[in-house]
Image (cartoon, rainbow over all chains, first blue to last red; front, side, top):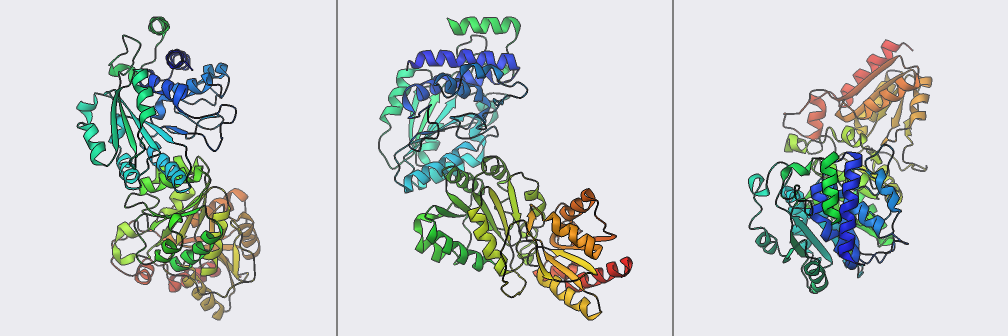
Length: 266
Length: 309
């Protein structure tokens, strides 16, 4: 699957979905769109025709507020009809603002409150390890989410139990809900923290598909879990949304929507 | 209750290789046998209850039957959102065993008093809330929770009622009748049943027979047993080593009012004074907070007289 095309479709769908439904977090979705496209387009072993296939790779979006991006990726991969996407955030829809598994084939875990996904992923990875299964467990965390203490409990656990089948991707766009990460709770030296906790750490450009594909493919067989710190731009792909705190919550309407759509379709 | 629970769980683990026990770094000397016998089915998550519950949910999503283990409030309050979002919302077979219900760890102080747990856990959807009163119920409830879908909360007490092994089938959500009677019904859960039975026997000496129900499952509650109790005895006294807010007594009163049952006298024995700040054993604190056998006896007698026989 052409991951660049998939990323473009995820971005366009997400813009339509969030604008039509009047939901927030478009910039958070645009930030991770390339990561999701590479994972669903070329890395994850999943079968849209058999979403609960036991041998599938597990994927958890811990930053559940970017759920529209996952719905879009799943629809484009054929887990459910693309037409369903436009029900997002509407009365009676299955597609809630934060990602939900109920009625949505392909979603492993409903999230929305931050700091939950990694622990659940640890449970999945631990179970797979002791039963000798070969699938991997992938989790996407936001950077702001790394404020949550529960993540650091899980980070300790994964290293202690040598969960080499666990891959964390941090969408490191350096902007959280109200201000920048640096102005809120500094994470730096971020990579060193993960290394000090016993993880293999890789730093990549989170919008560069070749870099992302390469890093997911070369995660070395190791006793350590892997953390891919993906340096990203919040709002990536829409000039007036990029690196702007405003678009964590703002919904594109009217001219803003038209302008954003035009830029994303270029 | 703790030893009985572990013995039962060990038995279950031998039959089900996908049963996992996860402790939050508690259970010194108690879990050794289990760990030695089933090393792949035992996990110490460390002092990290949020992660423990998330891991349990992850395993649950993969089809495991999981029991988390800790004491007092630790396995529920610290990780309440993990229980709600990760376990209950996903309807996985994760069961939370808390050792030390009520004032079991009385002298350790307020942090170790589990006196709001039933109310809090009862409010969560998809959670079965169980507080056994004797060892037979502990063993049967453990088996029942392991084999039933969804999240279970198993409140285990330091004390337990000394009862004979009954010849009956344990059913989650179905109260047990420990004493026959028609002057009043005492509805109780947890180890404080030992006090309730003493009180019931004392009242008998005064010429009154109290029905005693072990409401081991607080949720889903046995509405039929409550209806019959109202209909046949006309009055209810609930006894729980827990706040009077939101636990057994609240649950029973909701059933009575909504059902329009005829219950002329009703009272909840439980903690009425907020946090306990007194140092003391379980026995001592029960006496101080008027939930020991003597207090139950006096309250029951007062209700019987108020109601008229």
